Amino acid sequence: MELILKKEAYSIIGVCMEVHNNLGSGFLEIVYKDALELEFFRVGIFYEREKEYSVNYKDVLLPHNFYADFVVYDEIILEVKSKSGIADEDTARAINYLKCLAKD
Image 1: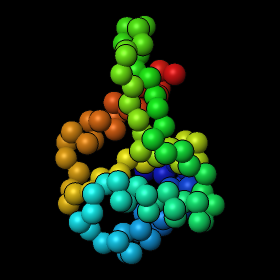
Image 2: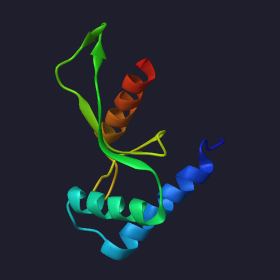
Image 3: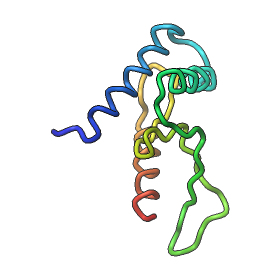
Image 4: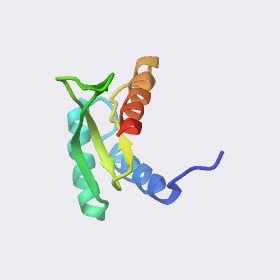
């Protein structure tokens, strides 16, 4: 399988590994988000934190939006998790985020 935005994805992974190597595990997600933000800024990677997206249901904008933890390089959604594994609901949430964005 061909990885799209390969260079960008590898740079994001590098930042995530840098944060993990320095903080390790056991902190709340907010701590990792703060560290990621500092590291993105330090290495000059464009990002937006807590970017808001609307949810459209049958051509009606719902009153509640979702917030992507980070949008990096204006194209990649980065959701931060602070646990030992990825649960099915985490995957489902990410897929739903992408579905909402595809409708824009």
